[in-house]
Image 1 (cartoon, one colour):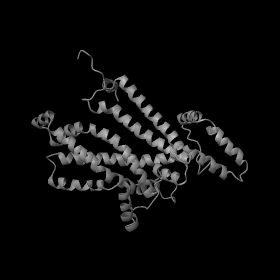
Image 2 (cartoon, one colour; image 1 turned 90 degrees about the horizontal axis):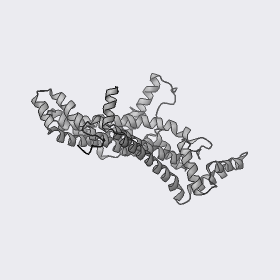
Image 3 (cartoon, helix red, strand yellow; image 1 turned 45 degrees about the vertical axis):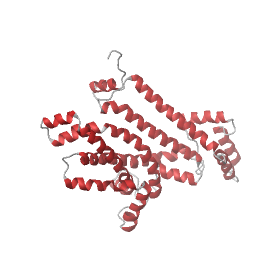
Image 4 (cartoon, rainbow, N blue to C red; image 1 turned 120 degrees about the horizontal axis):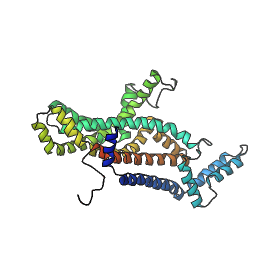
Length: 349
């Protein structure tokens, strides 16, 4: 970004709004972390008590087991009042210290979820970008009068998958292309027989394992983006600047993409940020269906093993990631749509 464009961006985004949005993001993180702390402790059975009980039984017969158990309680203040536990929990969150896993004790939770975050970001991030691109294109072509009839008749077929939930379409794809035709792998993220390094066999293995999970996300999400874009395009096509561009004799493709799509797409970015939360929640089930080693699959494994420390870490990461995506979209919105400004108007204007 050049200095001029940077100044133009800051004119559309005043400092007070920037600080308010940053403050709101941290408030969301604070509230999410607070709920993440109190809800398990308010649940019947007291999960924290279950953690210490299981650790006590697991340490039976182990050398220095009692000392290990007592050290764990002291480190996290589990023998302290609730407000002390809460203060230590929030302090640990600031340092990305999620504690140790219960089912894989004494492994650190951060070491368990770090690779899962990478796999989920790759799968969900790429799937969302593909969904957004195809959805915007399909919606624009459906609303554009110059779209050939054959294309207009074929495009609605791409939205059929929207009537199915992520996991159900995933199971159908798994049955058709993994069990029946054996075109793609059944589960996992790569072939374990191939060394994990940046070489073509490993990359090809990763891509082949990601095709079906990504398809289940794309096919079920593309319809919402397409229908929303179609409605925005219908309103945009009737604007005066569209009539002026047509009267100038500009090429049809330029009017479509540079005038219609460019001015209709900004509201879609807000839809993208909001839909990201739903995609993340749906992708959790997709990862379970395909045994894909992302956050969703790790969350399911943690629930099965009653590994509450890992569950808390994953739910907090998901909440923060969705809040961060909404923050980024909100901050760059004035840059994408010059008609929108967050700067306060002067009283004399």
